[in-house]
Image (tube, rainbow, N blue to C red):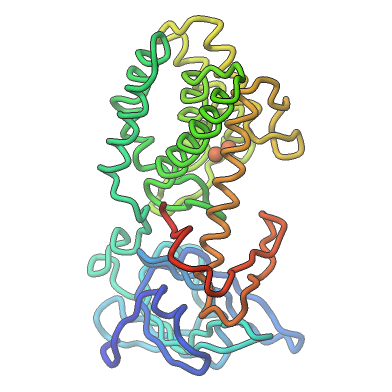
Length: 348
Ligand SMILES: [Fe+2]
Ligand SMILES: [Fe+2]
């Protein structure tokens, strides 16, 4: 693992087809598959602080065990992929290929590296927004509220809850799936919801801004129980079998008792938590039934799709203005050429 310059995964995504690269990262998924001739090949996802690369590894690739500083040939068929590869550091040499006009990646040489020399913290992706800036914004938003919501939010966003909230990812994949992702997503939803609420209030609508803010800030608190960082974002068992919406409502119910929130405010905010996905088939047991819940649900959906648009506009080399089909956003995104400026930059 010495020759050639190490690239980050985001630098590799800029490369032309036919280019070679070298990347150091951690394996976040590895699966063996078989082609029609029953020859094995592997699908591996390697992540670093800039994102991840999904690659194919054909049966003629070379594997090396370099964990003890030597280079010992390795047969991948004898490897326990889950135990020896998952969450382990690797160095890979690869090539960019092209399929139907899209870049794909292939790893030709894989080096298993020493976990002490390459700790996983090196490869953890974080929010592009500085966490201190986000926390400052959170405090400013809470300060805007009146009683009793303000005092309740001040109690909630402190201590162990705040430590967990500050670091949590907003997802395992799809959007904000990195350290501080939940805080980044929560602020974007709150900003959007406040903007919408103020626009409707200006038009004469009866919208309670404090309830909008509390509902936005708390809408995804179930993700504290649904996801964990070990050290990469992963789904917990409660997250899988209960889901973040009921988990969030249970957490919220405990908080309202602990900090004695008035029942009327608790009901209005609780309704936002359970209805924020907007549809039963998306996991909400009830649909938004108040202006505050409609606004938070719309802001949540919008932030998700805006993130997907933003991430798709960074995909390979802009060879097409239209992105690949995005299954969870259920659409292709349009990456308009010459759209003038850098609107929609990730993290804004
Ligand atoms: Fe959610
Ligand atoms: Fe959300």
